[in-house]
Image (cartoon, rainbow, N blue to C red; front, side, top):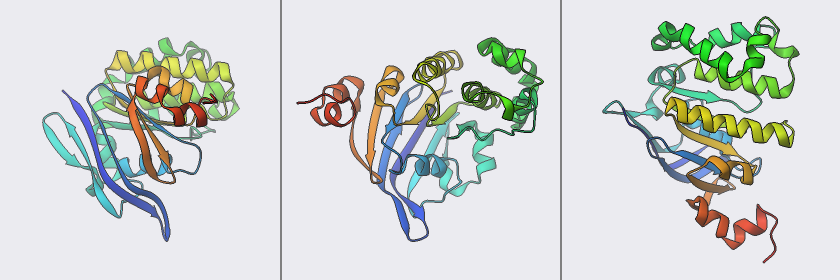
Length: 244
């Protein structure tokens, strides 16, 4: 069934600190939408709003799925996960003292995903062979790139329909960033996912995005498809290092 996320006029923050101001964007079924901007501009806050971890002060976040519309601002994080929404958090947030396989099994917390554990774990090991090789290794002892693979695989264990990816390139070498972004594209196509990705690496994000929104100081200042963004003078100047 089709999955669509509609975010309208979201204001949110932490106490007296406002992080988002009137943010609106829509992700159509099967799209990858990139939320682009440097650190401290509100990308992670918007992700947390979608997941129910931060409650907006105003605005709406609606998820259309399986013929029903859900107001995510009125649901708990657990209820949102149970709808089929998964987050790959910034910094990976693994359980470092648990093994690779134990981390993967924790990703299958959602009731509907439990019968699919054997198939999903087999797919994760096929997609990331190093995880199979290290399934008994403690997650905290793995390299940054391997931990990022595990974070992605853990999210897929819940059989999501909407995948939120928060800063997948943080802490990775340029080569690993490229490999990670490529793998996200492969997995998105295989699972027929709808994806919202927060990323500050503009060039890498544009490789797999259908649409992009640039956020500055908590406001969307520009949006468009890949060709529109790549041809914009301000985008070329600030994000691509191209002089006018």
